[in-house]
Amino acid sequence: MNSDKQSYTYEQAGVSIDAGNRLVKAIGPLVKATMRPGADGEIGGFGGFFDPRAAGYKDPLLVAGNDGVGTKLKLAIETDQHDTVGIDLVAMCVNDLIVQGAEPLFFLDYFATGKLENGIAERVIAGIAEGCKEAGCALIGGETAEMPGMYAQGDYDLAGFCVGAVERGEQLTGEKVAPGHVLLGLASSGVHSNGFSLVRRLAADKGWKLDRPALFDQDQLLIDTLIAPTRIYVKTLLPVVRAGHVDALAHITGGGLLENLPRVLPEGARAVVDADAWEQPRLMAFLQAQGNIEPGEMARTFNCGVGMVLAVAADKVDTVTAALTEAGEEVSRIGEIVDGQRGCTVKGSAGTWSAKADWVADHDA
Image 1 (spheres, rainbow, N blue to C red):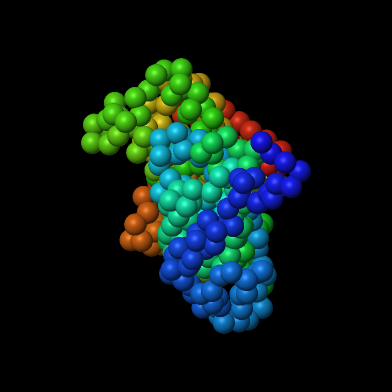
Image 2: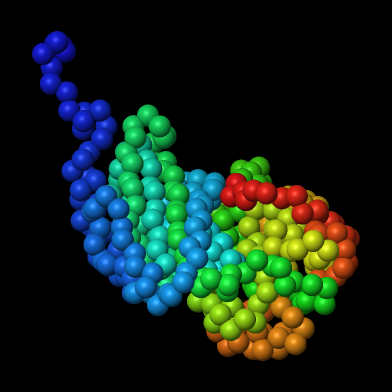
């Protein structure tokens, strides 16, 4: 029987300070592995320092962004696939920074759960560290929140925060984009981190066997094709951006091609995308067929195989294509900029769809 004299502890309430301390100790080597000029390799303080001058910048503008992974996390949790969602978290942030012409410098993460399971947390944070290495940015800190009653058993959520820099006057604003510019698309690595509410709805309604080979690729399990991490484009894009060969970039996330391209265009410039200019990945064709999804809905829900779009002057197309191909990107010429109302038109053998430039938010759902 409890008495008025009972001594309560934080751990009895569901929060283990010791488990948090063990996690910080365990991830120390992961954090150190992400260090770069400008950052030290220590964590545990109340904040992380970064020196832009040590990173080689003279008069930098700082660019900041934050994002999450959306309901892809539910799929990861339900299938015990925790090793790459950290890469997704980093990718969603750093890809947004390179779109501004900025090099990602440092990253911070937020991991929230009802009960801290260090084995899972370490796997997630190892993925974050791997993503930071792929992007060339330092993981300089973060926050782990153990909040009993806030999350169902086994659930967790992630948020990422990244700061980058670009020398003053070299930022990409899209102002130089004009009719005659060519649109180049870089292949995605899969669904990336958008549209998973629809993916999960299809999986439930159609009774997909996620642990079996995909119908469209017998060499891969269906879950592996769906959980494949978002491609990080930073290191391949930085050289052509710094060389002044790219006038605008669009990260194709929530809203797809239709609603992300207008975000980087000036007034009087309209993107026209030829949907037949690249082969739709088999995974995308599978999703479309399984859900009987209209082509226009595909174009504003999924990346449809294109994770990043470049607007390049016609005389730079060959140079940029060669450089990115040599760097390992799959490049397709997918359209052009024409004179017209700022927006995007996607057209192909299946039809034509258009969107105005009134999109103001990004969605991870």
